[in-house]
Image (cartoon, rainbow, N blue to C red; front, side):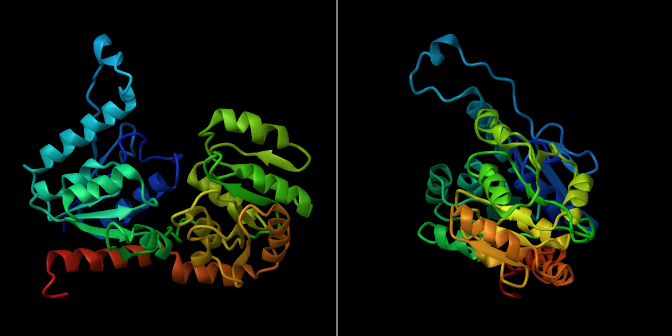
Length: 351
């Protein structure tokens, strides 16, 4: 198939990834390309040149001094992204693709889906947000929607129906490790990911902890994370995939601490692919990923319960955890499902 994939204009699809969405997009496009599809990825500047990428241009634009006096003036970043996606969607009307797969979080690919000849599949990577809800309403529900978990599908059900396809990770890249080392927490260092709660739980459980990921909210990190470092808790930095696989494979347990409704929880799947069991707050889609064979869940924001979950999860058998990830969390399984959806969208009678 000739497939257009629309990604983020803000963060490049390249290592070290800014977040799970960028890692997911890289893996998805790489696998579609490997399977022989003719893929064109529209993504932000700095994206991996090994991908079939076309730069999603962000046209230079400087608001006038007069317009900036408007108290309702949007940010310059908002305007740049608006221009980038508007230019892309207008341009796609003159290009020939069998299918457009929108993986961005921007509203225009959804709102303008009905202007394209090719069908549009949108993956819902977040719970409902106002700009995407309004785009769905404006489009009249044109297009096909995928939710990355049952939880996400339920959250969107009032606005649009969707097919559930769980996310996946490349289990040929995220390989098993020996375990036995410190616990690990990975992800963006932000309040909604709450690494400080993982630090508190690890200290309460009496285990060492390594943090890994980008500092996406410096003020939060200075306030809540840096004062908790030391005494067996360290920060490894923003790691490449190879480095992250090494840290995950050596870990005794992965700790996941969302303080929002995590749509999927890619960090949990990455850890399990490395054979590392998961201790997590029971929030968002994590109950769909983590069962007693592969980890332990704690009530939301209950640090004492999470400390106990860390000790319970660490006793899970790594071979079982890895096997579970291969069956339920693999990139190959996910892309099989998407290919089936593409076929059904393009030929609904045959489906």
